[in-house]
Amino acid sequence: MKAADAERIYLDHAATTPLRLEARAAMEPFLFGTAFGNPSSLHYDGQLAKRALDSARDILAGALGCQFSEVAFTSGGTESDNAALLGVMLANRSRGDHLIVSQIEHEAVGDTARFLQTLGFSVTFLPVDPFGRVSPESVAEALTSQTVLVSIMHASNEVGTVQPLRQIAEIVHAHGAYLHTDAVQTFGQLPVTLEALGADLITVSAHKVYGPKGAGALVVRSGISFEPLLHGGGQERGRRSGTENVAAIAGFGEAVRLQLPERDTEAARLTSQRDFLLAALRDRIPTLVLNGHPAERLPNNLNVSFPGLDAESLLLSLDRAGISASSGSACASGSIEPSHVLTAMGLPEDCIHSAIRLTLGRGTTREEVVRTVEILTGIVERLSGRLGLPQGRGLPLR
Ligand SMILES: *Cc1c(COP(=O)(O)O)cnc(C)c1O
Image 1 (cartoon, rainbow, N blue to C red):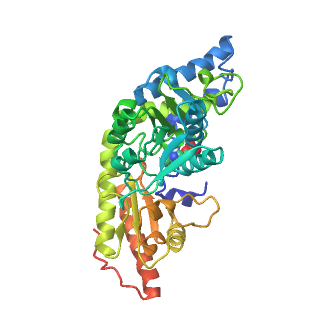
Image 2: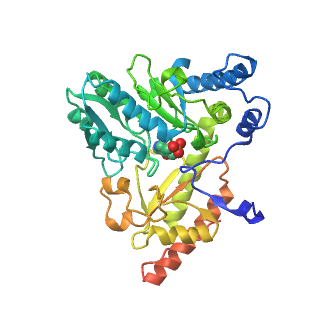
Image 3: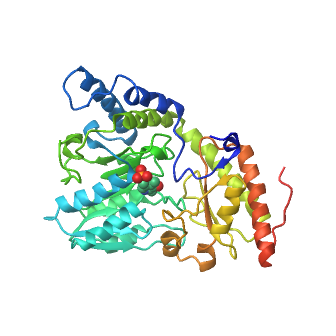
C-alpha cells in the first residue's frame, strides 16, 4: 500500500469494512498454520477445525439469540438471502406459492424473488413510504392464504431506514407465514436476535462486521422445512453442503465476539458523528436533502442529495480528494443506474441522480468527519458554481 493511502478517508462501510486485526489473528492458524484439517474428518486434525467452527457457531448463536443448531454458515449475505428465499419456498410448496418482499430489498433478495417468479411462484413487491419504510398495514393487505414467506430487510443498505419489523412479524405470524430478514447492515450496530426482530430466518455477513469476505450465516428457526441450495456432503446439518471456509468462519466468530460488548457505545459514537456531519453539511449547503428516515435509521448511515448536481461527478471529485464514498446503489458495472430504492421512495429525479451515501465505521475519527465537511462543501460549491446553482453559505467549521 502506498503511504498516501493512510490519508484516505474511508466512508463506505456499508459496502465493506476493514478486517479487524484480532479477526485476522484468529484466522491465521487455519490459513497458514497446522490447523488445516477438514472439520468433517473424525481424526485429531479434523476435530481441531471442527472446534473452531463450533466456537464460532456458539458466538453467532449467542449474538443472534438462537440455538447452536439453527446457525448455518454460508459464503456470505448473498448466499444466505438466496438460500432463505429458495430454501423456504421450494420446501413449502404444499403450504402455498406466494412470497412477499419489499421494493427496496438488496438485489440478493430482489433478484432471487424475480427468479422464483420464473419458476412459477407468485411474488408481491411491497411499496415503501417516502422515508423508505414498509407499513405493517401493507403487509397485512398483501398476505393471502398462499403466502409462505415474507422477506423484509432490517435496515436499508442504501438509505439506512430501519423497518418496523416486530410489528410486521406479528402480522406475518398471525397469518401463519414465516418472516425472513436481511440483517446484514444492522448486525453489529443494533440488536439482531430472533426474539428482538420476531424473525424466523436471519441473514448476516462477516465482512460487514469487520470480519473477512466470503463468510456469512443464515439462521433458520428449527422446525421450518428448508430445501438446501447446495447438495452434497451434508455439512451444516444438511443446510449447506461443502467443506466450510474454516479460517473465514473463525475470523467471523472473533469479529462478532469483540463487536458485541462494544456495540451500543460504538453505535452512539457513530450516531453523534453522523449527526454532526449532517448538521455541518446542512449549514453550508442549504440545498442538501436528507434521504431516508430522520430518526429510524442506521447509526452510521448518511444518504444525502444535492439537487442539480450528479452523483457520479460528486463521487469522482470526492475520490480524487481522497474520500471513498458511494452512490448507495450497487454499481457492479461501474456506471451508476438510478437507484431502485430511491425510485421506490418516490423521490424527485434531481434527488435520485444526486444522491450519495456516506457510511461511517470504527475507524472514522472526528478529524475525518471535519475534513469531509470541508472537502464536500468545496466540491459542491465548485460544481454548483459551474452550473450557476445557488451556493452554500460557507460558515467557518471550527
Ligand atoms: C452487503 C450486503 C449483502 C451481501 O452480502 P455479501 O456477504 O457481500 O454477499 C446483502 N444484503 C445487504 C443488506 C448488504 O448490505
